Length: 219
Image (cartoon, rainbow, N blue to C red):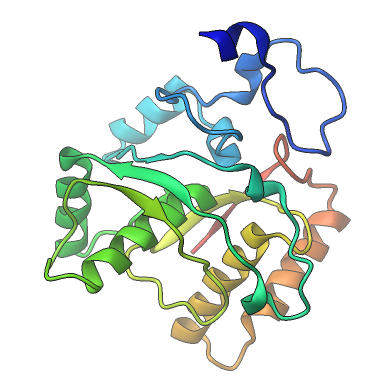
């Protein structure tokens, strides 16, 4: 209560003005306090849009990741593998785990909304791989996975994400996902080059970047 009364909502360093209404920096499905940043890809969704997707047969699953301050921290190292990635608390409830397991077993696509969701799902998949479990179960743990090019994505088949800052861990995650997709569909093309071309096109077309910017679907 004291934090809510006397504190201020943390905002990315590139947002210089007060938002006025802090609900502008909340997703319509946010429930649990704990993050210092919004999962900004989710800001594009309204209750009406979510319902429309459900009416089309899309199952929605909600997971939790308490985003940490280091999400704003640029990677200063020349070699990204030298960067010490932050840990973030995440949780997946039993219903979400069952839905994800069923979707995977039925060969359906899992589309993550935001890099935060990607990190949760891939961390959970890694935890399964490193344990005696054979599928996802309810989980309450720490995410320490640093997703870089070369990562073998286990759960996520597509993602919706905004356009990210250079030298950010989020952009590296997106680059890794693009590279993973290219290696499966067109090994002759380099994922990083495809991503750069996409960003250059977005700039040329006047797309908006960062938290309140436009989103892109990557498959």
